[in-house]
Amino acid sequence: MIAAILAGDTRQYHELIRPYERSVYKMALSFMKNEPDAEDVAQEAFLKAFRKLADFRGQAKFSTWLISITLNEARSRLRRQSTVPMESLDQVTGEGGRISPTLLRDWREVPSEALERKEIRAILIEAIGHLSPLYREVLLLRDVEEFSIEETATALTITPGTVKVRLHRARMMMQKELAPKLKNANPRRRWFQWS
Amino acid sequence: MVIECKHVWNYLSDYLDDSLSPEIKELVQRHLEHCEICSAILDSTRNIVVLTADDRVFELPIGYSERLHARLAQEIESNEARTRKDSGD
Ligand SMILES: [Zn+2]
Image (tube, rainbow over all chains, first blue to last red; front, side, top):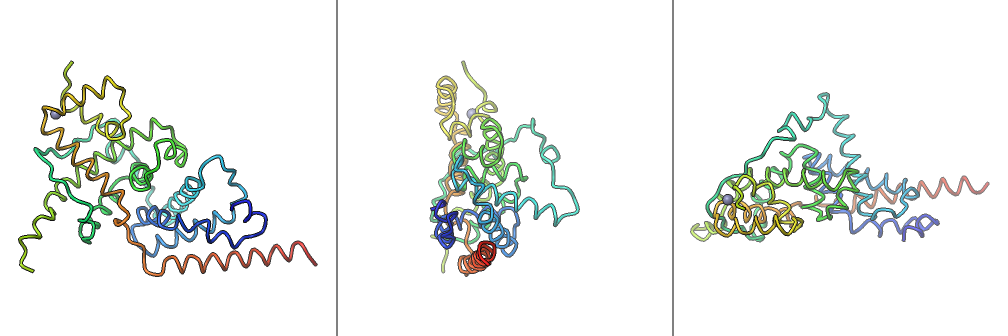
């Protein structure tokens, strides 16, 4: 399809990107943290990808390439927006520091159906937003987009080892923040509500 | 060899991705069998990873796709107009 588009059948671009509309938006939203900016970034990323399509050589998957364009767009928009430099990794926790998870004696599974509830979705999105950019990128690609470690490394132009280290820390930070919140939001409670 | 909880935590992410070496994996597994705290941390982390991957977490704004394709159509058209201008006179 890409070859056809480059050969002049540009309308096919609409079809090419359809499967990625959601991923690109999610990525943009986790960075911009508000819907209008996220939508702007998503549109801009798809336009850039269209203009640069001739540069795509198929060395990576199209999705990986598209996601890295989205990431760059979100990063540069954030840089333009803020007068303060983006927080550095070390300021947040220090790369060597250990993150202690929330200690629990047992865990009652939160079923996926709980995501029908807006407040559950909100605390998840919030927790992702609390991660500093370096960790957020890795978590989004690996755990939200379900890229492999290698694909994540390619999209971010870092080594697979770095992906693993950051992913570990990102997941621990998510557990630390979310375990207490999700425990309190246990959906079983609904059964005892009157309405 | 026995490992402490703190060390087990370091391996949880790789354990979930099944990317530990067989020796370390066995150490971790053996620890998990008798440590309810590390087991609960693993279960909660796995649960959170599963929830995070669910498509329902991020809702698309209403009309997002339509607006996106309208903007792309504009770009594609102006691109075609440019190509026509460049190639013919
Ligand atoms: Zn333990």
